[in-house]
Image 1 (cartoon, rainbow, N blue to C red):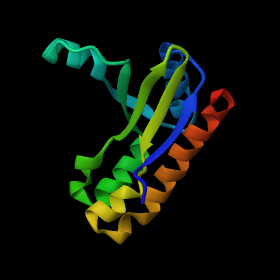
Image 2: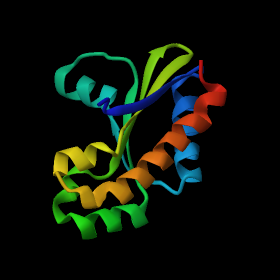
Image 3: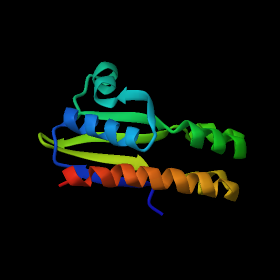
Image 4: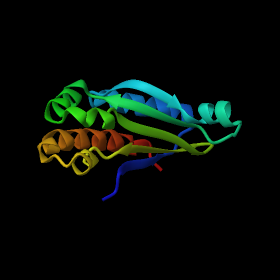
Length: 133
């Protein structure tokens, strides 16, 4: 089983990041956190890496349903979506496949919420296909 849903965008990093935020919002996800990996590695290790940001995306209804089913599932929330520059005008967008929750938690009762989250993440990524390479 693959653990990521991904696409490649023909866009500079900042524009790709904006497009991903808009696509997530269209599927009812809010961004709870943003981790700038490149800035963190520069600050902590003094190394330069291509631009890369992890967006912590959450659809509150799905998070609530998952937590009601499996209280410890919070360790897998929110849905991480990575935007990573691979060139001046190219970025990879990768999101953790929410179906992973079922196999990691070993709780089949999460299937419904995981499938809905997966559907919405896939729709997010597919909506970006118009700008994909």
